[in-house]
Length: 263
Ligand code: KIV
Ligand code: NA
Image (cartoon, rainbow, N blue to C red; front, side, top):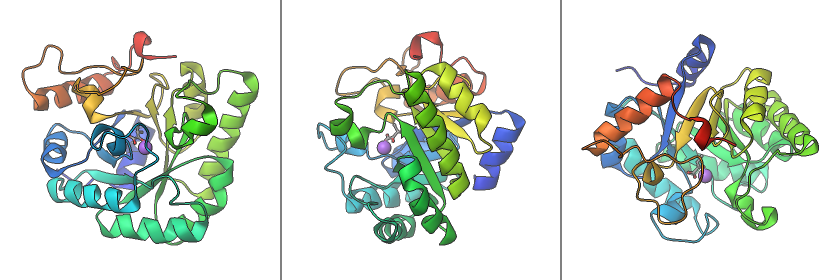
C-alpha cells in the first residue's frame, strides 16, 4: 500500500476512478477502513453528534478535532487524513491558520472548512502557508441556524448559480478538493464538470468524483432520523470490515449512490 496524497486524488479524478472517503474518529476503525481500501479518512465535526451526543456540530472545539485526529493518525498508515475545522475556528485567515496548524500537527494532511466565495481569502492564505484545503458547500451543517434546518440546497436557479460561483472561487483560491452536501444530482454533476479539482458528494448524486458517508450512518448506528443519502452497508454483511469493503466496492463500481439516495 502506498500513501494516498493530493496527487493520488487528482490521478483518481483524471482516470475517472471514484474516490472513497469515510468519517473516522478513532484508531481501531481507521485501521479497518484503510484495510478495506478507503482512501480518505475525514475527522468530521459530526463527531460532536455521533460520538458526543450533541444536537448539532456547533459545540465541537479545535481540541476535540485534534484529539480524534491524533487517534485516527495512529491507526492509519497510508490513508489521507482530512480534519474539519469546527464552528468558530476560521472566522479570519489568521485564526484559520493557527487552528489548521494545531490539527495538522495532530496528524491531518488537509483541513476542511465550510463555505464558498467568502472563504477565498482564507483558502489562499492557508494554501500559501502549506495547508491543503478541502472546502464544503451546499448543506453546511455549521450554518444550521442560518439555514433554518438541514435542508437540500441549490434547488432554485439563483441558489444553484451561487453554488457554482462558490465552487469556482474555492478552486481559484487554491483548494485541493470540495465536498458537496445535499444538492440535486444534476447540480452535483454540473459542479463536477465545471471543476478540475475532485468533488466528494454526500447526497450530491452519482457523478461526483467521489463519495463520503458518516461511519455511524454506514453501520446503521445513527442516533437520529436517517437522511435520504444514507445507506446501511451492514445489511447483508456479517462484519464491520465487510461493510466498509461493500461501501468501497459500491462507490467504485458506481452502484452507490443509487437513485433512492439522491435529490
Ligand atoms: O462532519 C462530517 O461528517 C462531514 C461530512 C458529512 C462531509 O463534514
Ligand atoms: Na463536518
